Amino acid sequence: MAVDRSVEDPVQPVAAAGKQAENPSAIHDEVLVAEAKHGADKEHQMSLWTALKLYPKAIGWSMLLSSTLIMEGYDLALLGSLYASPVFKQKYGELGSDGKYAVSAAWQSGLSNGARAGEIFGLILAGWAADRYGYRNTTIASLILLCGFIFVLFFAPNVKVLVVGEILCGMPWGAFQSVTPAYASEVAPVVLRPYLTTWCNMCWVIGQFFAAAVNKGSVNRTDVWAYRIPFGVQWVWPIPILAGLVFAPESPWWHVRHGNKEAAKKALLRLTSRNQPDFNADETIAMIEHTNELEKNLREGVGFRDCFKGIDLRRTEIVVMVWLVQTLGGQNLMGYFAYFLTQAGMDPGNSFSLSMGNSALGIVGTAGSWFLMSRVGRRTIHFSGLCAQCTLLIIVGSLSFATSNASVWVIGALLIVFTFVYDFTVGPVTYSLVSELSSTRLKAKTIVLARAAYNASNIFVNVMTNYQLSKTAWNWGARAAFFWAGSCFLSAIWVYFRLPEPKGRTYAELDILFEHRVSARKFAKTEIDPYTHALTGKDRIVVKEKDLE
Image 1 (cartoon, rainbow, N blue to C red):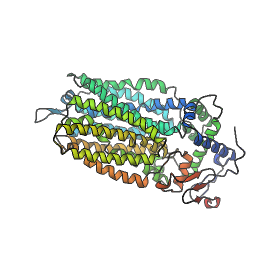
Image 2: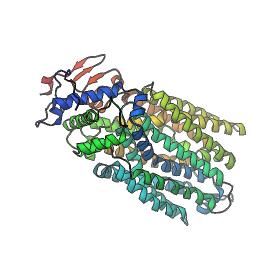
Image 3: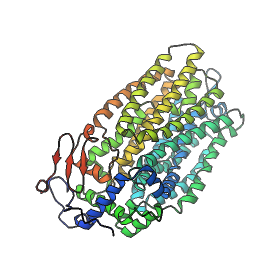
Image 4: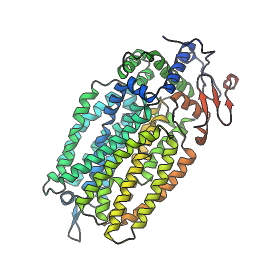
């Protein structure tokens, strides 16, 4: 194994506050520490082009696994669009006093929240399964279940069975939500991490685009296929993804956490290109081992309760809130885009056309965020995006007082701009943040807790949105934007004071920064070497060996 003997006196990394690890372990091995440092240094120095040449297989496998989110994005956008379909409303809705069919706000909430409830259960189950059986096997099992559950949606004779179908499908969707960002963040080096994690958001947007396109193609049908075709299209995704994942490697980090170094190295070699002279697999595995041992010394267990102990409580708070900000920033209006516009007076055909344009611009926005994240910090992007969203929501709410038909089109245009801003900033960067700010040993469970909180909040948000927009309830129309502008503003305040900057950090560096309780606003300016214990920044802090005793 390649070791640079010029490294002077590698020392034991920081143990938990006020104590040292009692037993010798891999973290005390000077050779391992030296190799780990070399591996970390190479990751810091690695250019994007070098990473693309070295990790093309990791990119491909990560993108394939993340594509499972296309299905969730498709269905959740599909429901919001189907509420504007005349045939769907006649099949699953009720005849109103105005002589028109409509799905009541209560059943709309039941359908949307049924999927969310199923996702929460699926998330909790996946958090346990991913740690025990791996990301790959958990995803394969979820895909098989989904293939069967889609039958319930396709043949649902009434709205009650449709709700059951949404609950069942929500369980594998929940598994996809937790597994995909965790896998993406573990199979790639630091320079590729933001691209692969934000690809999760791209898959969501692609799903929304397909939902709008399928609805656009079937909206003029007058038979049951107006809604059965959109439901049936969901069978297109699982089978090819399943066929590919059978051959996918597991995360090397997962193997190291289970004490199988040889399997970790084999997985890493399957994720990288051969014949790369500057790449040393042993150094990368040593870096993973070092980080794993460091985290074992900083915390005691890997259960759900450990996410709320010590410094991990702060990390859990941040990851949970980052995902909650998505629901509190008005993003829910995007899922009801077509319905929102029809309620504002637009023709259903035109609303579906604008919905397609809305999703297409979201794809462009997510792709643009990759350029932005290579130059600007995640914290800056997130905060700026929320400020822009708040401004747009205030303008949309103000236009609700206009009565001309032109104002409806302006509202539609502003919602498209809102989608672009969201998918250029808050949407994609969220996946990068939740993957990077949780510890590696608690990553799966922290993401599960965060996403479960997100889905629980979505139940409340969906009920609110349905009642705000439904003519049979509060009938706020575009004035609902004022409500979400307020929650968006409060979210921006939290981001400013609590969200740290993880850009360019290895997991070991983030562990030390959190352990020393560096404030969120100082994360970017503080330099840390997890191999020498030095923490520097505007206010220099040096952690000496005697301080650890």
